[in-house]
Length: 290
Ligand code: NAD
Image 1 (tube, helix red, strand yellow):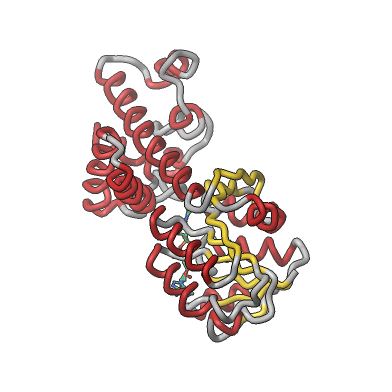
Image 2 (spheres, helix red, strand yellow; image 1 turned 90 degrees about the vertical axis):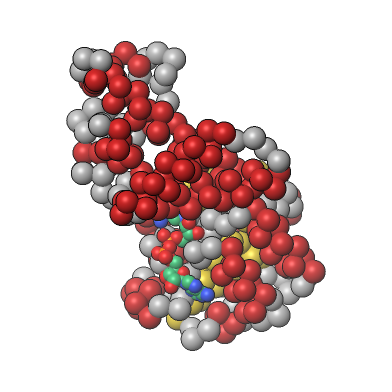
């Protein structure tokens, strides 16, 4: 298949390389020359504009920073330049409303489109082990699924357009809340005289157990290896968690959904990132509770 890939940064670079490994011909475009050079090293052909990259392709995949950039890339470059039968897949994390608007405009321009945001970071993008949560019609999902399978370990249909983004931000809101709760419990346990390993041994098999504790423990030396064991480097940056919490709060307001814990998590990550910790792993927020 000929696939155009727009946005070959930390995530997109590895994803495009996995499409090449799966035997696809990948037409790459990014505003940054370094990203294009890396894409060429991984076997992609590179183009000077997105409009040129999408010509003659069967599918377009994008992995871009935010909703405004996604909207303008599709309306200004993809629609009209990509062949009418091409399937469009936006894998960026963006707000639900813009995802639905881009999909709507795609349909009006004669394309099928899915929003397919990912769970998993740069290592999963490089290793082809991402999880995709996909919003779009049944027929769009069926066409997108084999392309996404080449970049991930799980591809789940979440419903109509925008539902992939809805699943992503609801999941990450829960993750932000549960990480802060886990940090609070460990910090308080220690102040009450409990050894962190002993608290882990008890809570990890009791009703307080959660992923933030047993797969990503914020305390160094406790539980499986996690960014806490690497001075809170190299995991999921607090700045990206804040981006997702802001998107979740926007969506909650639009849907009139009460999210008091989500709001508190957003405020705590605003403070943490504002204090210069944007690139620190999100579990590093435990340091503010010591
Ligand atoms: P990044 O900044 O490394 O990459 C984005 C790329 O898009 C850059 O190379 C940039 O030059 C390019 N770009 C920007 N505007 C463009 C345009 N108009 N046309 C073409 N290229 C353009 O970001 P990333 O970490 O790869 O994240 C991409 C998306 O994936 C974001 O939506 C992010 O929220 C999401 N995400 C990231 C992670 C992570 O761990 N990094 C995890 C899950 C989801």
